Image (cartoon, rainbow over all chains, first blue to last red; front, top):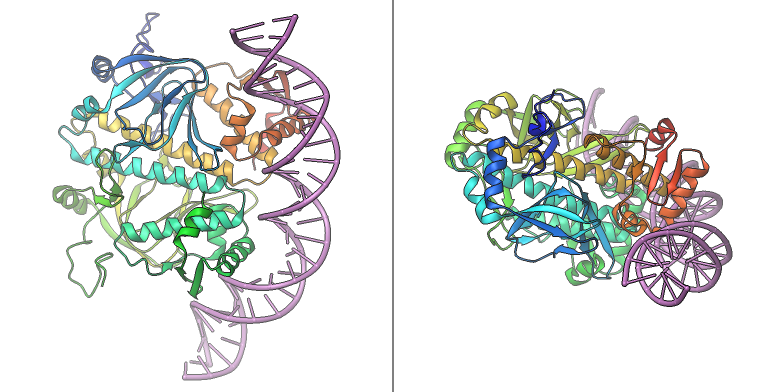
Length: 245
Length: 245
DNA sequence: CGTGAGTTTGATACCCCTCAATAAAGGTGG
DNA sequence: CCACCTTTATTGAGGGGTATCAAACTCACG
């Protein structure tokens, strides 16, 4: 048998303790998922965790709340979503048994979470989790931080892709590039577009012609101006932000 | 002028070693990015890494290639993309200085990567990286695996969102649910839809009406049948897969 | 059994994709 | 350095798919 899940004969400790699964990173596993926690890890996490139950439709945590805990789903389905200004919802992910939820940024939950079906899971306080992480190896912990960062960015990409109007996508794309420059302490006087219009279209899910037309529309609305095809100046940050809803 | 990139004429130790940045996970940092590697980590990684250069437009690695190394960008911009069957491209992410690229699944690169501008970076062999990871703490390593898994799934979500035709999105969504069930060793006789049509629409970026119509279209084409509103039977897996391109 | 949320079906308008042509920019070699 | 050529970007016209609004219908739950 596979060594996944720690299921000796019949008496399945599996499922009564925290558990996560994933497809292998570097080793071929034929598309199957492997259980990641060792018995020791499961046991240790069980000690600091509590079992929580959520009825169908109930709310698990809300975007912006202090991220005190992560949740490990035992049974049921959870949706992770963002509520937009126009009261519509964008679902970032559906999560199932053996998944983790509770991605944070700067101590706050990035998304909201609600139970799609009845849910049973483990609530793992981050305070307890932190003491178990990176005890000897900072490198691991730092890579975890980087992966969380990429995950948040990929989720934002999904939000951009979910928009229907081309000008909205382009506006969000410009804001993304600007914040990237700001994060790298570069000037935000101009937004630099190193990629082609086709690349932009392939990223935000529209045709290059639509990219071009959207730029023109934003220019005509007085939101941006072009120094050249690769350098945009954002004139109306307010309007640009409001476009993104 | 800016301190980023750091290859003025020769001499900056800054940027001459591997470096990654991210917004803080649990501590407020005002949206700024923090550098994650310690000096020791940077130095250790530098020992096993080599500096690589890519000219604008050149190819860094290709989807499906053996994932021998990850890359840490020093300067320049990289696009990570998938080439679809119809020869179109879907760009998964743009990557900049202090980012990592080379996400793998079962030992193979998930996406392709190409230089959008001239790129200088570090090539870090995974063999060397593995020896530095999880030496004392398996827990950290296992969480890294889970995060990589979630990252891949979020990228697949983005691919779904990038499709324009509603039926294609719904077809891919069904395949996703089916593979989830298969991964959890559940029956794939029926695909179970625990969520509402509105939830599905909010996830794949279409209206609930379009979800309903797409289901009907797939049913009329003989690809699926409904036991009830929550249970779908996939009759033509071939056709369903071919729809997703 | 009744009520309300969820789902299906229909009609219309709008936005974007597609195809096509022109214009501009970047790169190459003489 | 310039001419040439290829790639990229812009602009235009037409058709199709989806959002939106509205209404009938089904189902789950109390």
